[in-house]
Amino acid sequence: MAYLLMFVTLLHLITLAMLFIATMEKSWWVWDGTVSSDLWYNCRFDNFTGTWLCASSKETEWLQAVQVLMVLSVVFSSVSFLVFLGQLFTMSKGGLFYFTGLCQIFAGLTAFSAAVIYTLHYKEILQDSRELTSGRFGYCFILAWVCVPLLLCSGIIYIHLRKKE
Image (cartoon, rainbow, N blue to C red; front, side):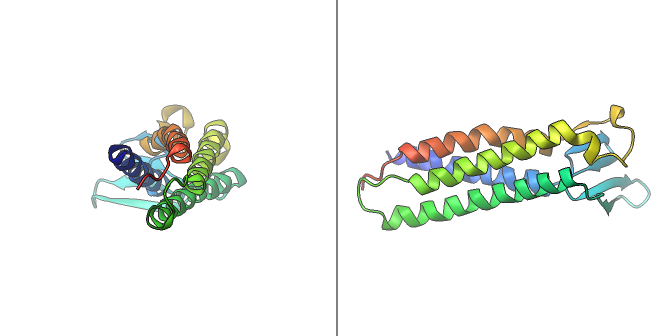
């Protein structure tokens, strides 16, 4: 039981970190090593100064939907972890972590929705950027997709996890 509790806690912290990185980092779409776009900025690397030069992304409805859903996913997962810690110390023996599990499942569903919207509408989101055929999805986009099954699995584990001590 202690190993399962440690595993679920570690899984939760890893997915929370991955969600935060996917939401905040600058590589949802990458053209080459020097130009990228994320949920907030379009950036290019200036070889002369050795710094990233970023400008705000053009706000489209699809981009705003992805932004909101990714932030909601981070919030749901954070609330889930805080509630889990609270339940761990206050819940009576034999109690189930329903609310924690539901928050994790909602985090997974919002991350899933954000990734699906970005997948289907990246042309509209990046419409004023460079030529899209020479670019590809970046690692933050992939992290968002990797988080989806991890969040859903941890939510299901939380729902079935029972406090024994």
